[in-house]
Image 1 (cartoon, helix red, strand yellow):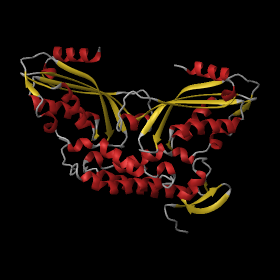
Image 2 (spheres, rainbow over the protein chains, first blue to last red):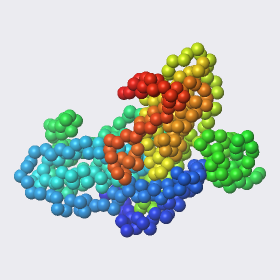
Image 3 (cartoon, rainbow over the protein chains, first blue to last red):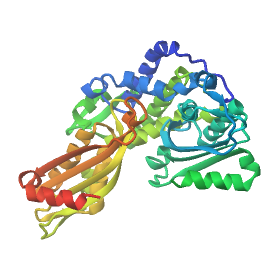
Image 4 (tube, each protein chain N blue to C red):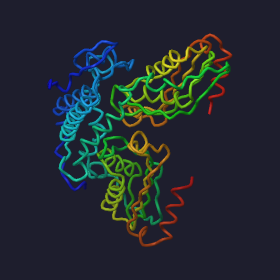
Length: 200
Length: 233
């Protein structure tokens, strides 16, 4: 879905750790730190493992998590799961961006276990990402799995690359959305979703 | 021209000129921000070499994570990430003296001065992941006051480093104490640690609070209480 293949598999993570560790050790030294001081002794390993965790979405697939949780249900009203906490890494600076994901879909005789929607967010957010692409990938994944009448995804996020560095705007928030099917074609459906996702 | 390895510097450490491995210099001088460079041009070319090594390391990391470093979105990421990391650790190259020199004033004021809600961004030295929050600080002047923005700049110097929140709090308090010799200093930091939120135990709403109380703030509970009440949000 990212338009490229990643070669990393679960079992290989362990083998890749030494390479990652060595890279982090070099980075610490070139930043001028003392890698032998107590606080930094195991940092290269911790940072390597942290980075692998933060990009674990690469070796998870929708099929893995959705297989048994799609149910036939005669329900054709909007289903919304909102305020899903999302944490990702900006692929430009390798710095976190995080916020909330709000998802809505209009079932077409098939509904999905609600937590699976949050798991889909996890799969795509635990990668090096761009918020626009993340939003679209979540929407497309739900669309392909359920073939619903429509899917709506909105993400509101804070980008540390804009807050901690660069332009340093503390309170800025980036909002992206993807509307598919009836949410794109019918303004009323879209409006209903946006209203319900916004308010309690 | 003397050729010098990227990791060696001519550094002025505690008044002595030395050619040392940067790690050795920093072990002694890093936390106190005491080391300087004798030659700006030399420094700039060194910085370029360092940046290049850091960028190459990031390229290696991207490959080891299984990413395609030739795809459009990642082409310049190693360099951007390297520059970002240098920015996040720029506090190592700044000293309190640099920023305070002209902004200490004689003033007959001995009531509490508080600057609160100072945004703080730092990097956890254990995971290299951000932690950020607010710093509230106060001091009781002893005939000398400091420009208010300098207090925020002191926070910047120590937070733009690989840190542990406890040490950061103490360094800010100690720096103010040494610069102004006030009757007391109080520093409180409330922060969110991404290493606890994004990974590991994954507790979204947890906050870590640390404090350092010096002088009057340590000895006098009423003074401490006044500070804590005035900084409560």
